[in-house]
Structures are given as structure tokens and as C-alpha cells.
Length: 181
Image 1 (cartoon, rainbow, N blue to C red):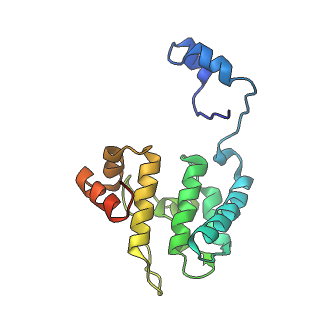
Image 2 (image 1 turned 90 degrees about the vertical axis):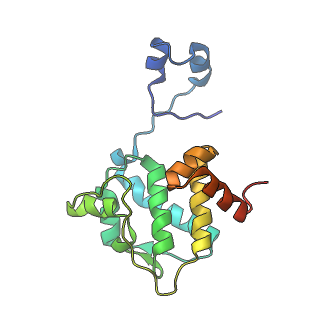
């Protein structure tokens, strides 16, 4: 079994907030993996991996990322670690106009990290250019629903709040896309 956490479990055991017996069962071979911000060289490797995966999954061929965009990724602190990087690359992959991700395909907070610009307020939507060939809104809506449900471990109320929807609106969309029985 492999388990991961960003908490100090030994401290949690001492504080009585984590079961000692479970800690000792999990702590057979601990591996410390530093956060992404401490291993900047990994970001480019992960970007290439995510692009390959997304190309296969979405049938789109975004083959590379521009040097300026890569510099933005390298300058960003990645508070959400690898999961956040994956989400940023997925967004950029969707918005990319052609075979290369450019700076304009990245969210404002990531672009601002390299340029020293202020990051937008939490929850603010990052502006983007509509690609010439257009976009498939239903496909994007389905992916957003799926991502929100994944992040909230299937909790529909939390997923609805994450998307700025009421629970009934979320359930309507889930039924529309065949995501519920």
C-alpha cells in the first residue's frame, strides 16, 4: 500500500489526532518527496508527460511548450503542487491554438509569477483568447464537472459550490452527460 500526505503524521500521533497503530502500519518505508517548488527541474518533465497523456486522451496534438511559457511555470511557486501543474497544463492544452502552448494559454496567476504582475483575486477568472477553430463547450463542461467531482471525492454539494452552481443545477448537468444513474 502506498499512502501520501502533506501532514506530519508522527506529530499528529503525538497530538492524538491520528491513530498510532495505523501510523506504524503505514510507516514501513517512508519516502520524503519534496514539493514541486523545490524541484524545479521536474516541472518540464511533468509538462511533457501531461502533454503526451492529454494528446492521447483528447485527440489533440499539442507537442511542445514555448520557452516563455516554460519560464512562467518555473517562476511559479506551485502551492497546489503537481495536481495544480496538471490542471494548468490541461487548461493550456484546451486553449492552445496549434501545436504549442504559449504564455497566453496559461492562467493569469502563473503568467504573473514570471512578470512580477499581481495575481488575480481568488476565484477570479483568467482571461483567454477564443481559438480560431472554436471550442467544444459540452466537452469542457463535462471535464469541469468530472474534475470538480474528483476533487471533492464525489460530494455533489461541494462540487456544485466549487463550480459556482446550485446542487440541483449540478445534478441536472450530471444527468445531461450521463454521469448519474
